[in-house]
Image (tube, rainbow, N blue to C red; front, side, top):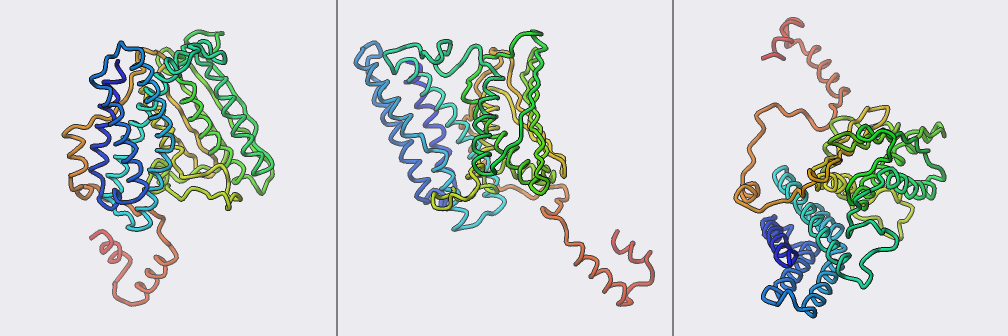
Length: 382
């Protein structure tokens, strides 16, 4: 069986990378719990290594084990996120550690998506007496050969709208346009995993709605969220545009940074916290879902106006190949390398306090330690 051979490889690869994390991060209770899940799952799969793959009892037992592993790993993302929170609160973050943890988490969560995909496919195809799901008769496991892109987008909007209405008592409308360049006049359909697309658009809708409601709160007029879907010969593109004020361009990268955006998960007793926010992992995980089948997710911000979020998906199933992390010498070197200083000047991460700067200039000019403005300019250039 393919899964019996492939799953141990993927588990072992990412377990090796976990072992390369900083010692203090490995000692956090949450990361130790995640490690124990992976150790147990690997051992359970290896138990089938020498068993007869044609035996019906072995097949049933293997499928039961696959389902058990899938359920065990349900909370991998929030548990690992909590481990990062524990580490950050106890030890703080330095640039080198932040860079290594960012590199690891992108690979770890991508590995988790790929493992989850294999487990779901096997359990859906072999785990029940009914081989065809009546609700989704055309699905092959979790893959829909004719995924209704617009339908998934509308589902994501309606569910995000429900959350937004509950918290803000209102929500922006949806304006949706579609263009099928590949097959004009036909519905936009691609071979894809609907749950992956739903995860991405639901997350983007939550962000767009929250920004729109808060940016326009004083006006009580909420501009709609515009979504444009285009199917070309090679790419399916979903662009979501809001008028939520955008963010400064210097903050765009932070939105995908686990170490920057990580925050304790809202507790039940503090339920007044907005339900449209959590660990802050929504965007980076959504980007990984897009990249998993060779697509991408990008943000373009217009500070003071709004944000465009663009999802790219391969239109051709032959191009939708898994993007997987591979543990090799290059990966090992990344964890062990001492990252040198940038050979370009690095601007401040925050805007300068010009009030303080002007005060310093005024004191300098009044001190008489210069002869002219020209001398001052020369000193600045020196």
